[in-house]
Image (cartoon, rainbow, N blue to C red; front, side, top):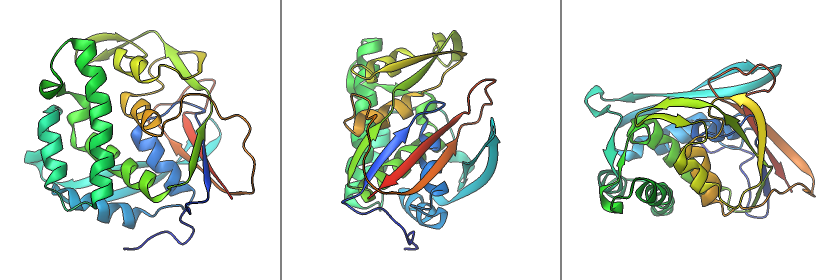
Length: 251
């Protein structure tokens, strides 16, 4: 596998600076921008899911004066594309895939964390949780890519306060608060930072990643030698804040 030459080591510390929020693709893109993983490496891993030969595409973008990486995926069969799947179907897909066992476990763990809060939010049994946007192929690949990165960066982690937006956004369930109920449940125990911006800043996928890392309080004092940093971009442009997440690797 074509791994990055400066891939993190188990003794490293990764700090996540949630400047403009977090989504799964932003998390992955930040590691690509920092050179801690390669697009070829991630493409190879994601192709093991069994959805087709996946290619991770990197795009250089500007977000409020910051150059960052934005990513997209391509390569799956059109008949695979739909925006809703049950938790049981996604678990079966990952279990029968050729992914490394640790990446399988981590991916399924994240889907279950999100499934549990969706189950409580909608008062339905866990096994019947029906993912909407999260059931789409690109969201499944977000979780698989994040799981691979977390497993390969098996050091310590910290994160800044979590910025949150306000207002109402349109989702598959209908109008929802900008911080969706499932996201809010996942972020219990985190220090939140109101931004005054309209819209969703942290997606359910992004909140699940933070929960999976076991982070509950901001890590504001990071010591060590800074080696790399990278910026992963979201799709939107904000007026007063760069829609990026920054990751920094310390030795």
